[in-house]
Length: 341
Ligand SMILES: C[S@@+](CC[C@H](N)C(=O)[O-])C[C@H]1O[C@@H](n2cnc3c(N)ncnc32)[C@H](O)[C@@H]1O
Figure: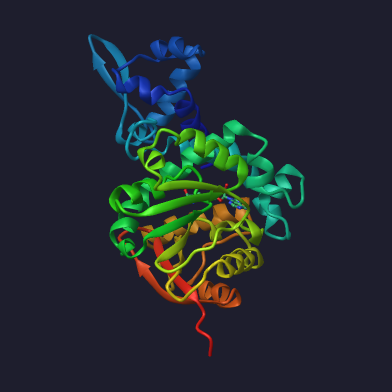
């Protein structure tokens, strides 16, 4: 149903779940707090209540609203919050989704069609000129990490690496907890200049930063000259990167990284959802196909199968070492420089 995300968005944007977290409120209390029309707030709350969002409590003859589990996660400080993701999806992705039908028979993405700008890039064109959306997108990426990161950190042996470079590492939502767990690990966050500028500012107080274990590098993964070299026991990490890009762009990114690797002991580690070989209905497959369609809407990217990863790696002078499953929807794809025959 197309309306529900907009209803959820309205209450999340107005921080109504946050207010109810501090105590039950009537519709008119809520309306006066957010400076909105009481009748409209009341009708919105009743519509959401019918979908399992919010419930009514009756005391002394007065009906007041309470959160349900579905609205608790719309609170920013909840450990499994989806608020930043919801705001990003509705503000940045909802409009482009209205052009999905046209994109099915076009070379352009729904995002490009919606903005009427062929070739427009979400990161370097759209986000770069919208600082608020940019910060919100970084928060959305951090929120999304709550779903998979614990499993990715626990179910792959990161201890073998002395240092890693997080390519497209944004605000460090993956690398910082990883460095907390592996206390000798050194890391560099590599991202576009405007992202690095914001990350350095946000993370300037981090203890890892001050102890010299965390460094920052501005660059562009399509420009080989900006990519730092790595040696033995080091890895490039690409978390949720390749699924944003077409096959030809992925080959370019991977071959640029391969050129910066100096030996058989360095690794490229991709953290991606991947795609199950069997396409039966399951919760995992539902999550993957949903994100796959989001990639199709916003980018020329996709969630890829093992064979598709192998093809990309081989074309870039790399070879697949293993695909490590985790107890989450994410998998860890380990690759190294191709062995010369
Ligand atoms: C989908 S986000 C993933 C962020 C982070 N790895 C995570 O999983 O939370 C993609 C990241 O790639 C970065 N990026 C996009 N184009 C880039 C480029 N040409 N060079 C370097 N980084 C880029 C974006 O700025 C963004 O931080």
